[in-house]
Image 1 (cartoon, rainbow over the protein chains, first blue to last red):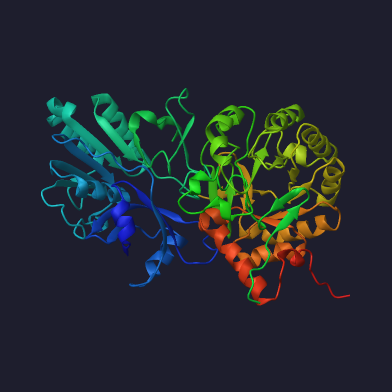
Image 2: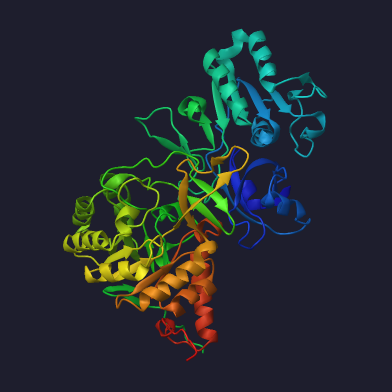
Length: 245
Length: 308
């Protein structure tokens, strides 16, 4: 979905999110968080969604030209990789969203994009977003209808094996379902590769007030919990207690 | 009527510029909303619940949406008294609104210690005593469901502070009037009601509770009729002012509480849904007063009409 807001487009960093109020009534009540998935020109930003419940069903019915209440941009966003680094993006399903916005923002397009989906008809295209030419993208599908038959982590595993000597200059960014994130986080820690994950959480305010989106920290001395809305949604993987998730 | 309606209300010894206050735990320390709501426009802000020592809070998931509401089990996560005094208080002291500290203790003595620590502190206009949190193992609601203990906590705080004391009551009781009366007799200057209603939600696929804490506190418009009723019951039982809280989303909801007899209202969950909710409510109250020739909003308080 494309949303016109020059203010949000001007302010947003890749990896940040917005809270969208679907409808104007009290059911469903809470706003829904969506990663900003990229921009079109100077006034439109994109969000990706899949109809999974009441809220997204209402979003799907929103007519072109309609208005939605959007709060954002929120959260920390990605720290852009330093020039000269090989950027490796690993996404599962709708997790491509924040990584699209990152890919769009990275100037040097030395980007390996690995995206896993259930089946070829679920693949989310990058076509609506400009500036994404020159990216090496590879797919995996659970049913083998496109690209590698299996998990996206297999693609990463293979890539890391081939490029073992370059792991120092690699920067990994990941977003997707929890089992995928856990697996990639473990691989990155194994290979000692810099890796940032964009996390999802149920959320009420998006502003750090309700403290509903807690995620356990790996260092209890620092803090027991981070909040996905304010401290995240992007975290260096070493800061999160993955066993608690 | 062309002139501005007078929105000022009194909560016992506490004067508010208008009756719209943010509810504890839904507005942080105000700075979380700094780009959206100027707290100086509000009647007051009630701060995130404060305990003597820092509290990490409950494990996630901590929140789940329910029909026209949400369950939360945050577990009173907060920075603790020392950090609050250093990190938050100086900025709060510059505000031109009633800043109300919400305190929570594990024991009656802890409530007393917190009250004493805030005694004479510039920039804190009043203390709201939380004896009704459903999401902590000890204290909290355990205090608020027993009239004798409620009174004991209230008395302890009143004796340890020079500030107006507001006691926030739990709806999870057999008869709110008994608790309200006990707290009034113990010296409270005002009551807030209601806190959240204990609830639970289950994921039918995993058959596990949706909250790690198993139970949580229900808030949002789903609980508003319960809150209205309890405010109505309380104002007939006590002489101290009552602050209405529970599911207020817009000015019509706020008016319902005022007419039921509340002197002021707290806006909670609505801050999550519409961050500007408090300001919109304020604007709606002004318009209602103008349209209905109400010169002073206090005229509306308890103006409920029940046929003979």
